[in-house]
Length: 58
Image 1 (cartoon, rainbow, N blue to C red):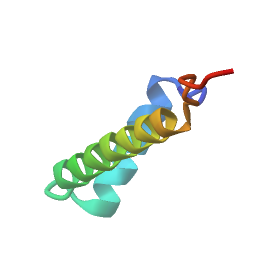
Image 2: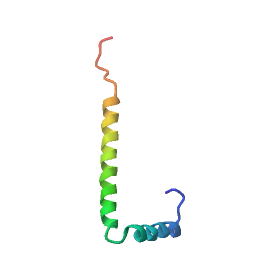
Image 3: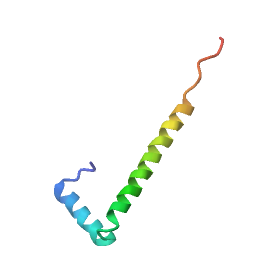
Image 4: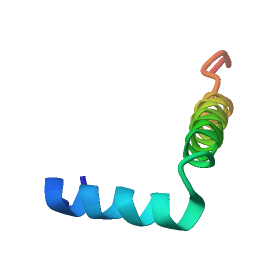
């Protein structure tokens, strides 16, 4: 995970709380999760449309 240890993760969390405040963190996490989910769905749909059809005579 980006070569981060537990101390670095804790520091990032503390900085995020200081910047955004404790009330905003769950909202940001939810928004990030929804964005990531829609991105994954878009990628999988893109892969499905890129698959060539092998239903040809030849």
